[in-house]
Length: 432
Ligand code: HSE
Image 1 (cartoon, protein in one colour):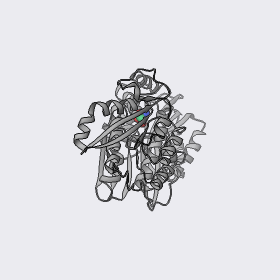
Image 2 (image 1 turned 45 degrees about the vertical axis):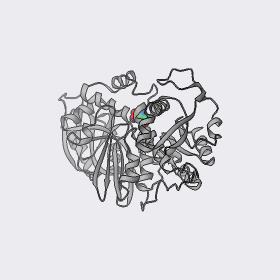
Image 3 (image 1 turned 120 degrees about the horizontal axis):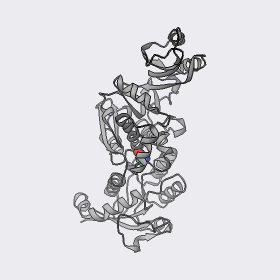
Image 4 (image 1 turned 60 degrees about the horizontal axis):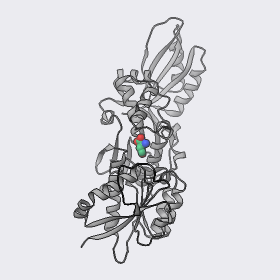
């Protein structure tokens, strides 16, 4: 006998209409596969004038959120409003009313995930949030189920499609940052206000969620070192490319000496690295575990249908655990505290660096620069002066061996003050 589970959708935008479209068009298939009939009881939005790519009966539409929150027949609330307020209050209200919640809201979970998960656990309801990281890529399920026996040592990858698209167009077509961003906006990939994406904030939100799941670390976005791509110069991408590197915006969570490195920044990686070949708006996330070694998940990180695919996976998952008659469930905890000794300061990071200096071309310049590096115990692996223009400013590009970030920062402060340095030096971290 099929089980009927009633769903209320709050937020009828790109993802909400994708969810409605798939539930209406694939309901039978989902029922065959899972034995569950997911029934949309109500869809709430503040405005229904805009045309949506799905036709739903008018009787399902409401502008009153309480038509969902107070409807006792609704088992699962799907929160797709985005933003922190009033989404936080809506989710809290749904939980308090004993409803399971599915959300795609990364900003909300990154900032308040632990309290929401704790409230849900206390109330014995489920929270599904597969769509909050990596769109259609089942990364949350992989961490919570497929890899449950592993101690996770690292999670890293490309989790922002907009930035990856922009960097790919810069690298492949020699576009400037603003040309590539405009192209992303024209294609509907980037928002008119792209701040969250190009400043790395969206990636930091996703990394905060992964840090809680993978390592039990409750890292708020403000505790994650975050640098976006908005100051990337095409010249750096081109120099890096010449020396066999691709530039990617990486989100990195890595256990080092018992502490967790959490950082989002543009990163040079060898062009033969798998992530170097993740191009356009695609996402890809590596997980390193003590049992599996490494696993890679790749796919579309955004878009109506990939996100809807993740939301529906959560709906089916939760429904499987809901007893239709008694409504009883045993909701497990979402996260577990690991033995992580805190978040590592960015100054303690040890990695290689690419530095581009703009220096007046005259004798002794390179000697002076290398003496600053030597004083800070930074070893230079390669150094190249790009052009020859006696008495004028020319770019000098160098790569270091592994060095401490704190030392690099102090060296840069000193170097940027030297009389022959014409512009602030650009530094980009390199990972293998
Ligand atoms: N804006 C995000 C991106 C998608 O560009 O990947 C939503 O998380």
